[in-house]
Image (cartoon, rainbow, N blue to C red; front, side, top):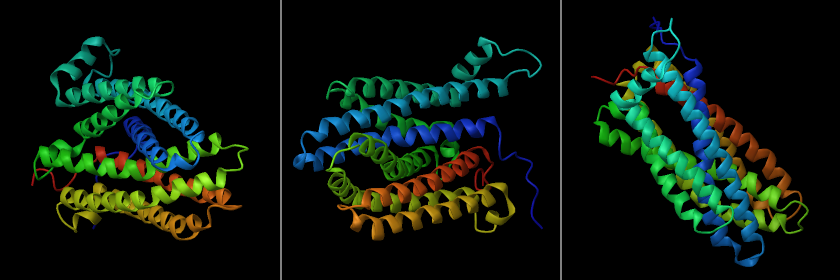
Amino acid sequence: MLLQDPTPLLDAATGARWLGYVSLFPVVGAAVFRILVRRTGSGWPDMVPRLERRAAAVGLVAAGALLIELLLKLYLQARAFSDPTLPLSMEDVHTVLRHTSWGSGWHLQFMAAILALVGYALARRWTSGWILVFAAVLFSLFATPLTGHATEHPWGPRIGQLVHSLHLAAGSTWLGTLAALLASVYPATLGDPRREQVLAKLVNAFSPLALVSAGTAVALGLVLGLTYNGGISAIFTTAYGRTMLVKVGLLGGVLVTGWYNWKRVRPALGAEPGAERLARSAVAELVLGTLLLAATAVLVALPAAGIGE
């Protein structure tokens, strides 16, 4: 008989966390994409600044969305700590920020998001802005796990934070870079006869990185899922375990779509209609990835059977 877990799967905080992941991934991905542009742009040097500005614009919008998500998440957390019959006061907010480990983690995340926003704004005009961007990316990957299950990992908070940070880094390098590539290359090459060649070179450079980062994200995700569940049986008897099964199913869909892009779409790039095919299949991969992040947002709030054992 399945246990009835009273924890709600969807609430306002879940939506806020989902927005946070959806925003963080392109914050990371735009920085990775800029590296790919620098490495592959020798054949079309006039295109490089254009692509870099587009990538910076993508990162800037994502960083702005991340700041909005953090403010919303703070409001919801303070609301949860306050008397629901009274209006939220600044004292309630200060209590969360000053006297909880969650508040300490939030402070670091907010600082990282501000740094990313400033860095991407500067990178649109000056190359030196990318230094701040890369610092912000590392800072964000370090700070993001601090308001989730990482501090309660069965192997200890430090190992938990490390594994979560690496898992985020791998996932955002995979899906975030793909999102940045689509959002940068297509507008930057609109009407340019070199679109197919530019896409082919960038996608071929991205593919090995995507394979490694996807494999790493999957492997670390399985490690996290099994350790938090406390065993195989808990997968079927807890809300956490059943939600993880949904995440695994979505992950399978993302992997299949990514495999199709790698084996069928990528080799056809360089000539019409390769760019059009890539746009359709890559968008499908990102849509499934977005749903995957929604499942992740649910998992963060659910009690895990392996914690405290």
